[in-house]
Image (cartoon, rainbow, N blue to C red; front, top):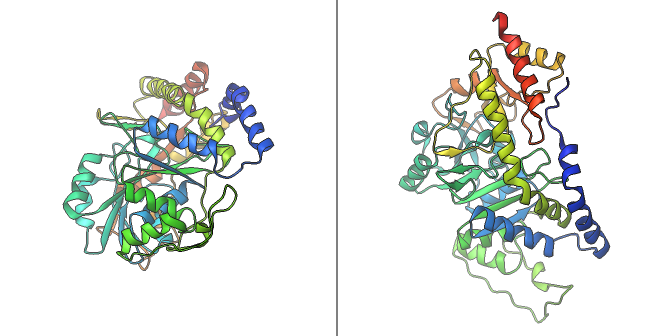
Length: 398
C-alpha cells in the first residue's frame, strides 16, 4: 500500500461542484482584487472565530509582518519567539528591522516554554510571538500574564492552527493580533497563496488595513496618528467614484502590497464550511495513532485545556533518519519538520538575533528527532492502520 503524506486532489473532488461556479463568476465579472467575495469571506471568518475584525492579505508571512507593523514594532526592538518553527516566523521579525530573541521550547507539546520567557525580556523587548506549532495552542494564559506585566504586545502565529482552541477560544483571538496562512497544505488551504490577520482592537485593525495597502488614505492617516501622535488631514477636491479613489494616492506610513484576491477568497469560503469536518477527521486519525503506535515512539502530550486542529502529527524518534527511510521504502509519506532550529539557520547570527540563555537544548533535540506521519482529512482507516503497522514493524527489533 502507498499512503501519501498529503492528498489535495481528493479534497478538491469533494468540493469541485461548489468551487467552480464561484471561480467562473469572478472570471466573467473581472472583479479580481477585493470585492464581495473577499468581504464576505472576512465576515464569515469573523463569525467563525468570534472576533471583531479580519483583514485578508497575500500570505502567511505577510500576515506576520503586518501584525508586527500594526503593533508598532520598530527597527531595533526585540521580539521573543520560538526556535522550533518554519523560517517565516523569525524572518517576519527581521523583515521589519526587529531582533528575534529565541527562547527554548517544551518537550511535551513542542511549543515555546512560557516559564523561560521572562528571563529573556530586556528594555528592548516589545512583543512576544508564540507559534501554535502543528496546530496545538501554546499556554496562552501564562504568556498573556507575562505580556500584561511587562506591557508587551502578543502576536500569535496561527499559520498551522486554524480551528484549534485554547480553553474554548479559537486560536487567533487570544493575543493582540492573530496571523494565519492559507498556503494550500494548511488545514484551510487556498488554490495558491493567501493569509489573514485578526484582532479585536479597532486601532490595530485600522493599522492592518493601512499597512496591507501602501499606508494610504484615511486608514494610513489614522495609523500615523495612532502610532506617532502626528495628526494629518487629507485635503483634495477630487471625489471618490466607483472606479477611482483619490485618497489611495495620499500615503502616510510605509506599507506593503498584500491583498487577498477574490479567487482565493471564494475557494476559502467554500472550504471554511467544511473546516470543522476536516479537523474532526484529523482528530479521529490522531486518536488511532495514539491508540495504535508502539510505546517505543515518543508522542506529544497536550494539555486538557486545548483542542488541537492536528495540522501535523509529529512523533519523536532517536532513529529519525532510519525511520524516515523505512517509511519511504514501504510507501508511507513522511516529513521532518523542522530539521534545523531557527537559531541555527545561516541567516541568523549574533548581530541580527539573540538566543536566550546561550543555548536551546530542547529545541535542538526535538529538531533532531521529529518525524511527521500522514494526517489529512481524507485518509482511510486502512491507510492509517498501514502507517501504524509500518511504524511498529520498524521498532520490532529496537
